[in-house]
Image (cartoon, rainbow, N blue to C red; front, side, top):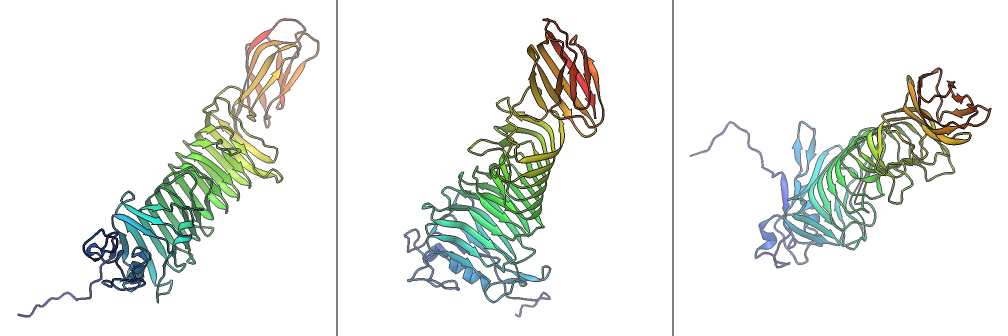
Length: 460
């Protein structure tokens, strides 16, 4: 009987290639490559399944699996391009010291849509690279890359990076998820340059090993749940970058239009201009041998801090020979673990405009909206701008044991002046006080009486 069907029949290609960590050559299996496509028993340099050594692969079968995948491209009409089968690394250790290169064979960059390397899980699939240079380099003509569920280790710290991709495509995409790292490389854990759209999630690595991600002056960068505190994680050249749930310091080495941090534990070093920077519900860390939580080594047009906590110093610069400008510094809720916020040394940082509210009261070290002045004879006068915005400003001025046993009035300038109008709306000190937009004048009591209380000045 002849089988008939109305459906067209085409040769079937599996969408994945399996690589086993077990084989006969490493005494972990009784059959070649434990029955999977590639592995430690694979013939060195082959691009076909079912060929075994000696000579055996020098890359745990990974290079040969890539060689084979390039010959098995699957065409997707909806994308008008090809996808290589996913390289699936199974459970176990994949140890090698020879660098791997994922090429594209006879295809051009316009043909390739996607390549992927996926492990069984970031706990059970362990890549151990003991060589130098980059462990795995991707052809610059590849269009999109997906990397998932892997543990990366360079126990000798001799490698430059684990994954290296310097793409030439103007609309390339990158997805990196569920990567862990027990022993890092000598430089970046991963290096991605010229990538248009990036999504990086759930990276766990030691403190010294970060990620380099650079765009083309456009595109979108999304990073979530990276756990490390290294100083060499670098981003730049994006229209918008969003980083959430991380513990690390970020360095901006190439310009970014808009950068937002949420639930962030670390700091930012601005070595290149940023149009707008927003930090929300985070811990900005100015400790760990960093001069400040926000290191200003470039012009930043707008900074907004929303319900953030600061450790140590908020603002500073490591390049004190150049002057930098913050266009607007906006703070809506700012707290400090050690009660006294060191605002920072602003000798080479100019802040053109302030927009402050919900700042905890009390004298903070070098806070530009707060000051403390000794009375002419005794006591103190503390000024605290509890709100300092373009359209509204309010100072609470606290007198504590103030004494002026002379006939000379005392004038005290506001830390930051009012713009146009100022009026005293409250005074329970018993002193006669007047105000201008620049400060207050205390009429001399010419007595040994001491005065305490508050004065409230409001305006704009």
